[in-house]
Image (tube, rainbow, N blue to C red; front, top):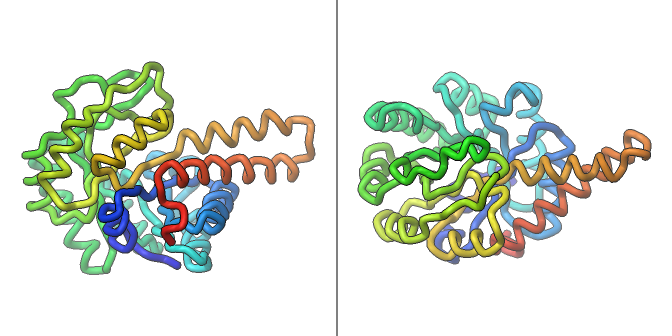
Length: 276
């Protein structure tokens, strides 16, 4: 069933588990994610990100994701991740996405507030949930997640939520997008302070590559949504390597199975199994 963030994250926050966002660029990844959610009886968030559109154009993949969500026997949020422009966010909404993330975190804080608030007003008028971001979640390949002056502060979180009205807030506490070269240093104390300061569900970006204990800790201290993509790609690559001598369609099926296992493992770790 197609739902939005408010339908799944409030329960996750209340009961101290997290719902995974699994970005997909093709129907192999989509099939794997939906199959995992139905088998695990877990809510799930599926979508794509603006940076991924060269590998799966929005108009091409959106109908498949939305149709799969509506057919599913578990709650499925169709989420447009890291929308960098108002135009693309509005396009995702018009195509049927039930949720968007407007990411103005790279701009000036005042500009981020203003642009996010406008996007929230537009999306809420259409019953679409909105995630925003403050602080800077860097790139693991460059190590720019290691500077704590880019981390989110409790005061910033309070002001951002009050000004914009977002339904979920992505915060920077030391994670990064992509595969880590060195072990990330997560600021759990900062996370706990932000959780105590606001009631809005909190989101962790850059989840691929964290240890199991890292995930347990961030969920224990207030994260309700975790974004995963790189781990799915790694599972797909492993499938293609293991099946290199197989026929094309057999490799494809192996890829779906490996990605499905990766998704299910994260659901077990996040505590969302059996919550649908």
